[in-house]
Image (cartoon, rainbow, N blue to C red):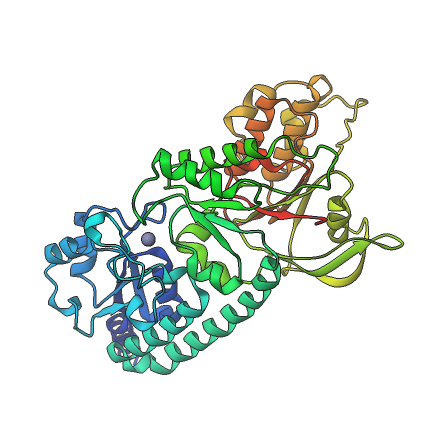
Length: 482
Ligand SMILES: [Zn+2]
């Protein structure tokens, strides 16, 4: 009897192992979609590292191995992977996943593409000769692609068909809800300069104007001529430059500094000016793989049309979502209501309309604007971190402070220590209120490093009157009081 049971368990194990579909996805955002639709029935290998430009890769032996073992290849298509996928495929010699086979699935073939008419020749260096391939940055197209993918997975694993279909519908519903929210957040956005023609689908969906491109043609690095033309065109405009970690910061830096110079000094008695040509790296979860990942996960914190104040309204309505890994900066001049907005979360101010939704069991670490130093009990810095349960390994820039007495630190050092007291702990949400107060330039750089090193399973909300220190951090900027 026992033996029979064991045998049937073994058989079950063998059967479920057989049902797994091995999928090779070229990019991590497609990998995310396959996992979302396929669930336990798929095993996904992503070929392109998320921090590398998928246009420009080399075929590697590890890719060939993944392709040799794949039952299904999910690619972006429209020649995005033209430089490396064909040679990786020929090295893999797996006839099941060649073009035209059931084992070959191309995202771009499932949806209409934009930019088809103005594509230049690949011989002129344009890496988008078939139209814009960046459909993976479009939640609506990704929903369509998800439905098609569910159908394809069902061909390979008929038993899972109904489940794949349901998952695709669920993805589409969630994506639709998030897009509606994002549209509200993006309403009235002054405009975006893109490094590459990659976020076009998303920006069109959100109605955010595109003011120009750092690249003269997709895949062609910017020339000095092209950049000065851009500076001329953008003089006096407001907006943000979006680029990723794998794109050179040189062009965006030049444009941002020149556009700023062209406008003269900011804030000279005029109305509160917001961010003019600030730099905004796509946060990495946006730039690559995880861009659509958050669509599926519930946010840690949501502000929905929040109007906050005391006896009367001070600020709002403001809406945003914070997902794990996000760094969001609430930026605005002093007195615009940023701290009142945070007060809606901590209870220091009142929510007059709208709502603040916290994720289940959300833990919050809050660094207040002027941390108080207790001079009666002179602790050492490491003792203070221990007491506040900031047990993570402190970064290099903090180590010299650890043995020092807290009452002997400079104002900036004490501020930095307090920031780490929040970031080094277990809280899922860290709120920093004007963290650069009292800091000299080296402390501000150290602060940017601390933020950059923040854990990916938590979100950071920064309130600041000057977001420039966030330029090197993958942060989103939300202007308050405009
Ligand atoms: Zn591209």
